[in-house]
Length: 57
Image 1 (cartoon, one colour):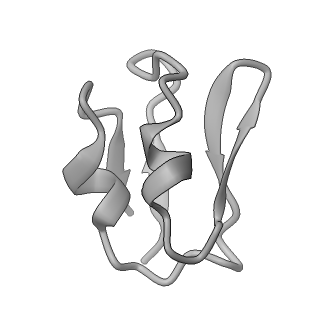
Image 2: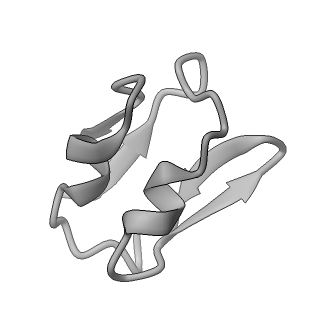
Image 3: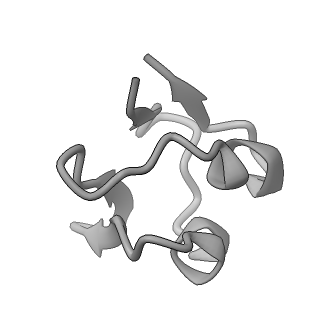
């Protein structure tokens, strides 16, 4: 169950990039993008996203 990003809510603050312990999140075209193969399902990004743009599948 990997994290998914709602690009409509993402403000490109990069908080998720900074807190991801697996380095599974990068910025692409000004929005967060999760590499599902690297995501370890820890939900840290979900907890830390200030706009609630990330959820778990």
